[in-house]
Length: 364
Ligand SMILES: NC(=O)CC[C@H](N)C(=O)O
Image (cartoon, rainbow, N blue to C red):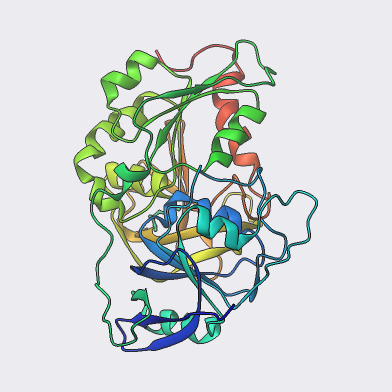
C-alpha cells in the first residue's frame, strides 16, 4: 500500500515531512518531546498530554506493541504523535495490539519517518512551539490551542471507589485522589500499599471533601497551565491544610499556587524517564520520570512555612516542597514511575505512614 505523505507545519515556519499513520484527520496542538526510550503506551495514555502533539526522541517506537496492563487512562488524550521509525511487527509476550492498531482505534493522527532530532532541536530552540499535522504543507497552525478548561475534559465526572486487594493496615487507610487527569499508576501505587482509593472530580470542594472524610488526599497530575485553575485554589488550600496531603506534578503546582507561590513556564519542559533530582535532606540523587512544562518559581516559595525538599540537578528548578508544620508534601516528578525508574516510590510510603502509624485519623 502506498503511504500517504503528511506534513507537520510549525508556527516557527518549519515544515517537516513524514508518512501518515492512524486517524485520517488533521490535528493541531503544542509540540512537546519526550526522551524516554520505552513507555510510549504510558506516555500516549497519560492525560497530562491532553491538547499536545508528542514526539519521541528515541527512534524505534512500537517494537514491543501495546498491552492491556500499561494504560495510564482508558484512552489517549494527546492530539497527535510523531515518530521516526515505527514497528508494525511487535515482539513481546504481553502485546495484544500494534501501535498502528491503537492509533486507528483511538482515532489519533500520527506521522512516522519524521526527522525527530531536527524537530526536537526546533522545540529546544523556540520553547513554545505549535504545530499542525496536515496533508497540505501551506497550512498554518493555530497557536495557543490549549484551552483554559482542559482539565475538565479529562477528569472523572462522578466519584469512583476502589477497594484495595492488599488490606495490610488495620484500619484500612482511605485516600482521595483529586483527579486533574490522574495516571492510573498513582491509584495502583496506593492500592498496592493497602489503601482504599476514591477518585473525585477536580472541582471537589472542601465541604464535599469533609463529607468523605479521608485519611489523606492526593492532588494528581494533569494537563495545561496550573493558573487556569485559579478559581479553585481557595478550596484546595483549605483541603490541603485539613488533611494529610500529597501533590504530584500539576497537583504540586496547584498546592504551591494555593499557598501563595507562583509558577512559570520552563524553557522547553522536562519530559522523559531519566531526570536527576536531589533530595535536599539526604543529599541523595534519584532518577525520576517527568512530564511537565511549568514549574514552581523558587523565589516565590514562602520559606517561613515551607522548604524546598527536592531540586532538579540539571537546571536547579524546584522538584518538591514540604510544609514545615503540616503533613503536606508535593513533588514535581512522578513517583508512580510509569514509565520510568522506581527510585522515588518511597514517597508514597512516606505519605501514607503519616496516617497509618498511629492507626487513627490524624486530623480532627
Ligand atoms: N504531568 C503534569 O501534571 C503536568 C503539569 C502541567 N500541565 C505542566 O505541564 O507543567
